[in-house]
Length: 244
Image 1 (spheres, one colour):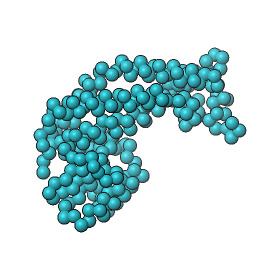
Image 2: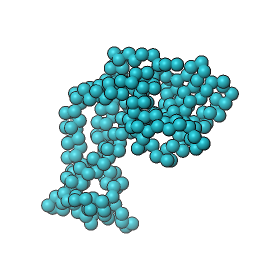
Image 3: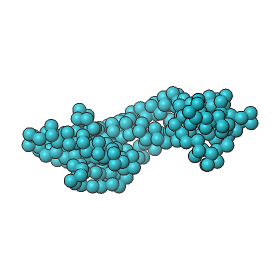
Image 4: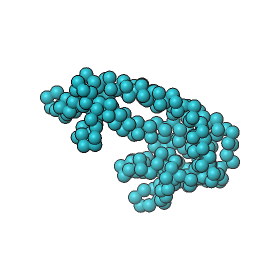
């Protein structure tokens, strides 16, 4: 059964709402950041080996590292998943580990939406497979065919079910084409993100700079020398000493 034709006017509104949700979440994350909490989880030896000298350098490094990891998750949850659900015409009333269910008279398609292949490691695949197996058991008496899918919003990974994993994988254009029925949707989506995000650019840059200044101020009393350089002894004691 092919998906209904994409209603691009409806999807335009959905994309705008999801972008707003994403921006609000990432701004809230910036507001709640704690420099001390971030520093506790970072590698001081790597900082020393990679040219960090000033407290500003240090704050920039820990902020950038945090944002690069957290924003992938935020974007997946607030943008990719709801957009995929909307364009697929499926339902979100799904079993554990499943984001979208598309049910017809003969098929039960269970889709787990992931941002990209690189964030889905071996342990994640095992957990996802366990979730699909549990669903398979629940539907064992149903005459409908179960199609378990891990769909990546970007990338090119492709696989079929095997003895190890009962799900198949699709990514990028193939994923968006399967759930939307339109092989142009993936490119249209990127353009809408690019254009729709422009009103938020300046606000986010300003908030990021404010956050960077706040992180420097929080770190200065304990981890800066009078010259504004990193106080390495204080940093390693805070991060790794058993006597602190």
